[in-house]
Length: 284
Ligand code: NDP
Image 1 (cartoon, rainbow, N blue to C red):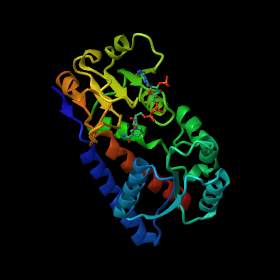
Image 2: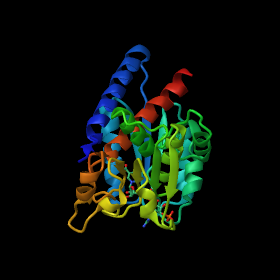
Image 3: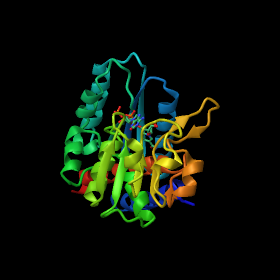
Image 4: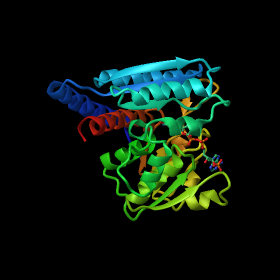
């Protein structure tokens, strides 16, 4: 039977730490971090993520500003707002909520954000830096997963980590971070043959595909650590992960719940990146 990895609890500890450090910096320097957010369109999930990010930014003592654009906004509109934030020394971090409407070139938008303010860690320069082991602003969800493994003293070095999913925001960067921690990493995806044969070899299994209850107990080795990144809404409106949690719970050593596992860590790491970016810009 698994131990539950409580992301809600760990994220609270991280946010408390950020809040204290922010208050100390403010008391000593009169300065505080500021997070600028751009959201395009009315996607309910994106709006809800942005509301949470603003709420938690305020809670730890950051300033924040949100620009909300209609889904008819042009690429030039978005780039102009990014440019204004890039030039504004009071802005420590810039986040463009993804996904963007289809007529916008997402990579161009991401690449326009000043590297030092790219708190999502998606800029090509940061992606390259991550893969060669530089001290970058790491993508928030993968960084949050690593924090969870550390918090629960789960050994990574020498372990076989299998990642299901190869997206730029989760699969590839978590593979880089696990490799840096000396795991032996296998990345799998929708064309992977004999997936279950590979997942059954995993000591650490990261599932990030966006398919409700995809990973079943027969795909998991007894005693594995299973990290469920998926966020899926059922027809009844319930949030479920990519892992068939009831079955897998009996077999795994550790399992992250959905909700309350990886999700809260993503926001905590966004705040951590904003503070890190602020300190580099203000005091480096
Ligand atoms: P993407 O849709 O960008 O990528 C999905 C990946 O899953 C692709 O690499 C795809 O393979 C792979 N895949 C799809 N079907 C299968 C299959 N049957 N077998 C093996 N691999 C498969 O998703 P994201 O990485 O953006 O997100 C994944 C999930 O994580 C979503 O539910 C998302 O909502 C959630 N998420 C949660 C976050 C959090 O904070 N908790 C943050 C970010 C995402 P291929 O490349 O071959 O198409």
